Amino acid sequence: MGRTAGVLVTMLLLCSLALHARGAGPWLPPSTAMPAADSLRREPERLVASVLAIGLGTFGAHRIYLGTRPGVPIIYGITFGGFGVLPLLDLGHLLFTKDLGPYRNNRQVFMWAAPRKPITPP
Image (cartoon, rainbow, N blue to C red):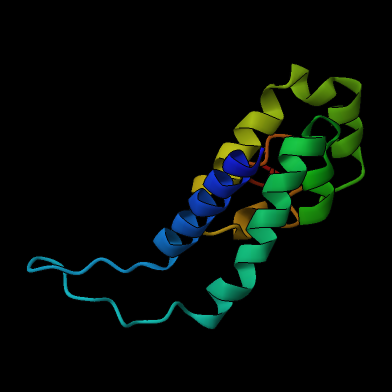
């Protein structure tokens, strides 16, 4: 058991060093630009929403966290997240979309769908 723990500690150390390494070479100048303060503030929101989508996505917990109308989590709960498909699609959008703005306070069941245009009288 001692050897396994040593290997695990070594792997964790190497992974933590790899996360902080910056690559620079003849083709890529070293990046010194810091991300905008707004993006640093928003990343925990992305992380929390993603963890909620993985753990309690079938009940719409990530949608409650991002803000939605009460009917959306009810629909998620009744259908178990569209039989498990909706939380996976939501997770993909949460992880791979740059801006989470369209998903905050989104009132639609399919948060990635384009919002409906208002109906105007003839």
